[in-house]
Every structure is written in structure tokens, then in C-alpha cells.
Length: 216
Ligand code: HEC
Image (cartoon, rainbow, N blue to C red):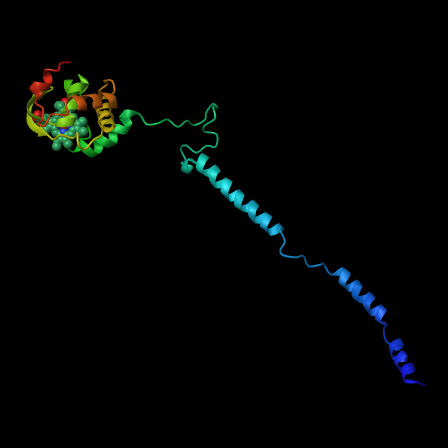
């Protein structure tokens, strides 16, 4: 028996090269082939989630109305019977804020003032009469004797023209003209601006006598 013969026998007893390669090939075929780089699927899902959150936030910002229980309705701005409508505040309603912070301390929340000190704003000819006088009082102040609803006052109201803008003066005067039973037309910012321009050179407080010359 030659050396070659024994080699041949060893190969015969085990598996041949061919058969080993076939088995490997079969095993490799069942394993999924690894893709190059990364899979795009998670990125697509992530993108969808991000856009869902993005458009969701825009939707809420538009339609939630801060989830106010009194006004929250997805269909609030569609014309439907029973739909809630958002009505902007009127000039007088806006003026209440100005009144509460700048006039209330003297003229009181009920507009009745303080007897002998601060005159009332309820049913007075100064409030319901010519708006030009009232605007001047707020812009440059008032002092000296004044008769309000038959009672004499002789006190000082400080000028507020530097503190309040035309819009705020129009709002607060509209508020006192529409409150406590008063019902006079509202005052427009343009009128306040006009009076402010006309009286811009004024440096002293008004007196009632001067303002009465303006007439009703
Ligand atoms: C510091 C107290 C004080 C504040 C604040 C004040 N007033 Fe007066 N107001 C007076 C006094 C005092 C008089 C009367 C002045 C006088 O005796 O000459 C008066 C007079 C008036 C008058 C004319 C008389 C009448 O009662 O109808 C009007 C109108 C008026 N104020 C409106 C306002 C408005 C509007 C505000 C706020 C923007 C305001 N006042 C803020 C004290 C004040």
C-alpha cells in the first residue's frame, strides 16, 4: 500500500471537499444576508412620528383655545347653529381695566366718588355731555371749584395725559359713559388724538369755568 493510497482512504472516510462546501452553501443560504449600511425603515417611522407631533401641535394651537371649558369647540369658527362665537371685547369692556387701575381710587368702583372730595361719574353732565371736556380733564387735569350734580367740589384731579395713550383714554371714557346707568355714545381714539393735538401747548390744569365755555 503506497502513501497515496492511505491519503485517498482518509478523504474517502470523511466528507469530501465538495460535500462540505455544499453544506456550507446551504447554511449560508438560510441566513439572511447582512445589508450594507443601515435599514431605512426605522428612519421612516421616526419621520412619521415627528410629523404627527408637529402637525398635532399646530392643530392644537389653532383649535384648542387653551381648552377653555366655556369656549372649547373644534367647530367654533364654522357657521353652525349653536356654535360658540368668540366676540372681541368692546371699547367699554377694555376701558374697565383702565378705570380699575387709574380712576377707581378716587371715583370709586360704583362711580359715586367720595362726598365732598371726589365727584361722582354717574349721570353727570360732564360724563354724558360733550366729550371734548371730559377728554381735556383726563389729558391735563382739573382744579378749582366745580359743580357736579348740584354739589360743589373744589379739589384737584391730576393730569393723566402722559400716563395714558389715546386708545386707553377713549376706552376708559367709553366705559364710564356706558356704566352705572349712563348711556352716552363711546369716545373714539381719533377724537382723543385730535384734542391732544389741539391742546398740546397747555401746561396748566383746566378749570370748570374754562371747560363750560366749550358747551354741550
Ligand atoms: C386722584 C384722584 C382722581 C383720579 C385718580 C381721577 N380723578 Fe377724576 N376727578 C377728581 C377730582 C378731585 C375731580 C374734581 C376736580 C375739581 O374739584 O376741580 C375730578 C373730576 C372728574 C370729572 C368731571 C366731574 C365729574 O365727576 O363728572 C371727570 C369726568 C373725571 N374726573 C373723570 C376721571 C377719569 C376718567 C379718571 C381716570 C382716567 C379720573 N377721573 C381719575 C379726582 C380724580
